[in-house]
Length: 93
Image (cartoon, rainbow, N blue to C red; front, side):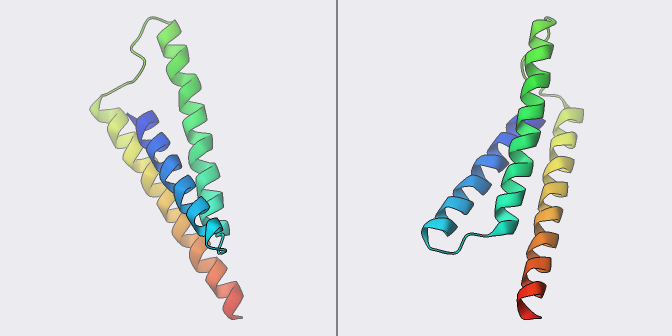
């Protein structure tokens, strides 16, 4: 489940970044968070493929994996918030 959650988050931040870029306001915080979620999605893709090769299910839809997905999403959003605040602080100084 964490694989699916990170892919959805990566797609959402990718869309936010490109819409912001199209309007002429690209955000470094959104770009960095987008790359973090794509990295996590790639990491879990490799893990899912390795599990499938070992004869397990492709996606782990368990309670523990869902909790892990929410932890990863929360950590990514926390980093995004910190980067956004830090970026605004630098501009004001």
